[in-house]
Image (tube, rainbow, N blue to C red; front, side, top):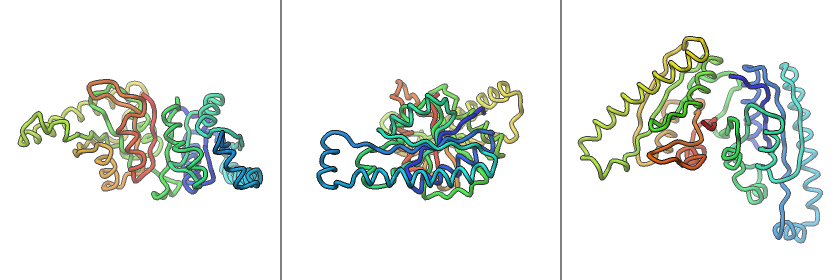
Length: 302
């Protein structure tokens, strides 16, 4: 795993602060530096005019945000540099997702760390689902941090990798194994079987056969990918990759429930998969999993 720079996209929310903890943890593992980026949203058009008519102190609000961001960056710089991690804070104005993506490309960062939700009601109204937009447009892995799942800043024990058996993409699997090599975490490859795909095609009694075949195919896939990892990295896996199959009407909910029941610390998933035909970037499973997941998620393009 080669990550020279981690971009910490912050909006001052609790999730963003938690994302800094993850960024610090990963920087300590990889030797990367961290760049903090705060984008002050600039409303446009009629919404901007309505804001100014209602509240003439909008400029003061922006200045207050700048001041808070500056203080936050100063605290982060002190904390990180005491740990030997280089830090730079950058403040810009614009449309948050666009600015984050442009900055990530310009500075050639290796990973983007951010919260799943926005900070305030105003920012949610103005910017919408910025994390989703970043996930769709990013060319590097994106860590979407979950607020209600605390991270102690010192360990990852269980990593879950959803696998699409109809897709040959292996980037998430390799990333998870790289991370496991650095942390000693256990990796479980999981396949989510959609029951509604088979309800009209096979007798109910045949479902057990389908599940059994899914286990066998998943085991073969995990073995093949594990072999590719060992060959490409020139190392032997410290721990075998576990496999499991879940089933339900919604793959995303099935994966989230499995992560919750098995106390997963992190999910690593590709941003799209195939089920017979190609899907759009950020396929439906990944898109639905991120808000449902009980833990943080790293999503990356194949």
